[in-house]
Amino acid sequence: MNLRTGAAESTLDDKGRVNIPLRFREQFQGELIITWGIERCAWIMTPQVWERFEKALRDSEMFTQEERLILEDKHLNQAQVVELDKTGRIAIAPTIRRYANLAKDCMVIKSENRLSIWDTGTYYAYLAEKDSVAREAMNKLGAQDLFRLG
Image (cartoon, rainbow, N blue to C red; front, side, top):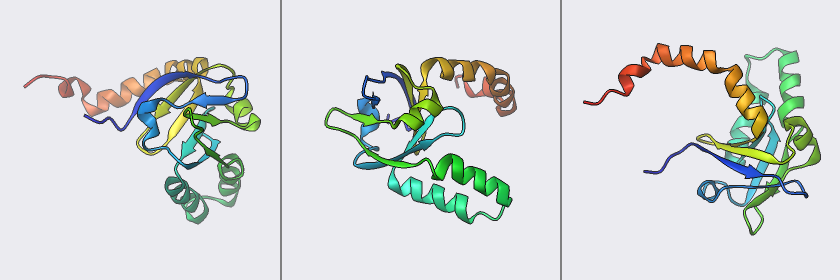
């Protein structure tokens, strides 16, 4: 089975590069776009996903002018082109490292169409803070029925 999501621990080296786990590299090769995430993390996307993301932010009629400007400042204006090096690392610019609080220990999280790079401590604190939200959502889903056999 090929999972479309996952998480792996990684580290940021002295030059600000993070190792992308081998199992995530197939989808994330060549030129990639890195920018600030919604939470205090970095997002990495393929150019195709970036183009859809950028178009959605710029063209959506649902945003007020203030919302659009904030989203542009936070996500579009922070974007940079990066590439995996020969050993599977991506260089993360100092501005993105500062925003995401990236120092050494990192989590690389793969969602269906992007990678998120988190400081490990920040990631676990975020999950703990959102635990009640996750529990409520799972209850709505009827999670206990999902895990029954037969």
